[in-house]
Length: 210
Image (cartoon, rainbow, N blue to C red):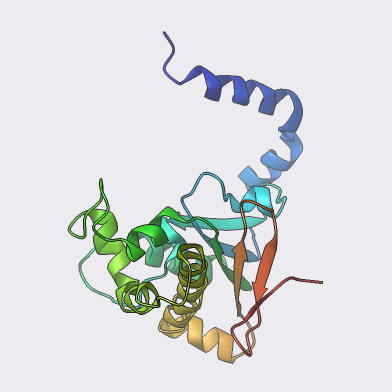
């Protein structure tokens, strides 16, 4: 009997044998992290930003939640994990870029489009969390001219744009962006093909990078 699943221990052994860069980790430990980019991504195990962008330790500051949503700026007595991570990244780490990374076949987006599907319900944690985009979900779900997969992809990309709007509701984010010290980006990753789509900031359209 081990204290961790054997698959994790096996992966750790391979990490130490081949991927652990002792000098790099010692430097990160003593000098701290200095990433230039924050990625707000989904919890989905198939869409890990460090893997998609082939990033080394210390290069990305990543926060993951269901459906890569950014809530609006709401300073109150409630717990706001994503907002806290954003504050730390912007105010303490002084990052230069924020990327909201959506992805295909997102379970959270599917739950928003089909709120009554088992085993989830609108009153559960995911239902409450996804209610942030309920208006957009209702509009997309009611479009009978689109197929189910088209509605899914549409809301996945709309949610990225809505999260970028919410990012700008944070005063320090808006001020730094206006001053040219912080840039906001949207992206969408297709799990089935590996394609990465980047959002045009001028039009909101998603395009394949050159």
